[in-house]
Structures are given as C-alpha cells and as structure tokens.
Image (cartoon, rainbow, N blue to C red):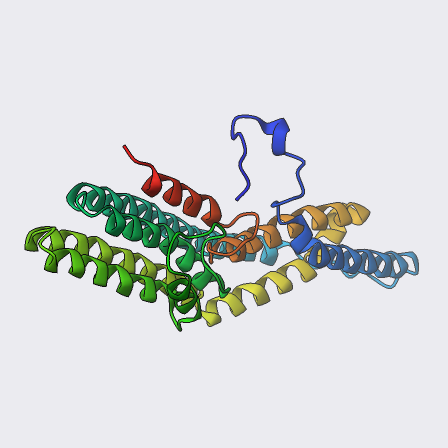
Length: 290
C-alpha cells in the first residue's frame, strides 16, 4: 500500500504509480485514436458537402447519468470489500496480541511452552497472507521451532489450519498439565476460533468476485458510451472532441479500474492492504515482553 499525506496535493497529484494510468492507458489511447478517425471522416464528409457523422447528444446525456450510478455502485461495492478485509486483519492483530498476552501471563510457569505458542502465533498471519496470495511459505524470519514441524506446516494442504491445530494441542497440553483452568482454556480456544473466522472472512472476500453479469454489462456499457461519444460531440466541438474524449474516457475507465484494483485487497499491488507490514507488527508485538 502506498503511504501518502492526504493534505499535500503537490506530493502525489502527478504520481503515476498506483494511479491506474498504466492499467487504462491502452483503452484511453484506443478511444482517442478512434475519436481522431471519426473527426477525420467527419471533416472529409463536411468538406465534400456529404453531410456529417454527428448525432444528437441527448442520448449520451441520459446514458451518462445512468452509467455514472453504475460506476459509483461498482466502486462502493469494491471499497466495502477492501474495508472489510482491513477490519478482519485489524481484528487478527488484536486477537494475536491477546493470545500471546494471556499465554505469557497464565503459562508463566512453563517458559518453553509460552515461547512455542508465541512463535506459532507470530507465524499464523504470515501463513494467512501466503494462503490468500496462493504462495508457499511462512515468515521470512527464522522461527525458533522444530524445523521438522515448520516444514510440515509449510507442506500442509492448509498451513493456517495446521498452525491452528498445533496451537490447540499446546493449549490442551497446558490444560492437562494443570497450568490453566478450564475457563482459561476456553478463553484461549475462543481466541483461536476467532483467528480462524477471520481467515474464513478473508477467503470469502477473495473467492467471491463481483457478479459476472454486472461486470460484463458495465464494461459493455462503458465501451459503447466511450466509442460513440465522438459522434455526439462532433457538431458542437469539432476537433476539440479529441480532448473531451481523452478526459471522459480517462475518468470513466479509471473509476472502473479502481473498483477492480481494490475488490481483492490481499494481493501485492500498490493499492492492496499492507499485509507484510501487518504481519511484521504482529510478530513484533507478540514477541515483545512487557
């Protein structure tokens, strides 16, 4: 995620990185080239007194309003997914901290057990990140755990669940060793259940894209609108149609692309959530002794 000062316009107003320009430049250029061709053909027709390619602009005025509403809905729906993803990861940060805090306090009599729980808690968000991105691995920092167990987790079909199972066994070991009471065990297990729930919420966002029919219809409408726009502007603006088409297509395609960019916030694009930074924060917090 790109960090910026929202109060300083000059700091980011002309930035290319993260602004969707690279993603939409091809579509916008094609629209402008098409508009240039239309203007040229219209000029030839007018020059030879064969009429004009211009059409009334009323239809585009009506369609533009409806298309704007569709784009706003698309962007809002995508931002809801983005913000829900951030809330899930924020809750994961808190429950990892609480799990480490309770373990360090309640299991103080067994320092090795506390250390093992802490290491697995620190590894959990990394495993979730890799799961969401379809990559393999855990934390980039060495874990002070049995290498065979770490390798087994990495090779597991679902590494976050493998870590959760190991934490469950460690909590059960503490309970059977009379280090914690039944109520304390339930509290720790509840934290673990919530961590799995957050993972499920992230997977729900990732595995449920925007409805196909909505996406296809919106893109078809955008193409029809932008590629017929020159005909509606010719009579009134002439060659200035090129500039107007450039601005309108940049805005329209840009808004749609923003929705695409943020609807799955767990990737590694410039506008996705800073998962690595959140994982580093969790690892640092759970390992820091009060």
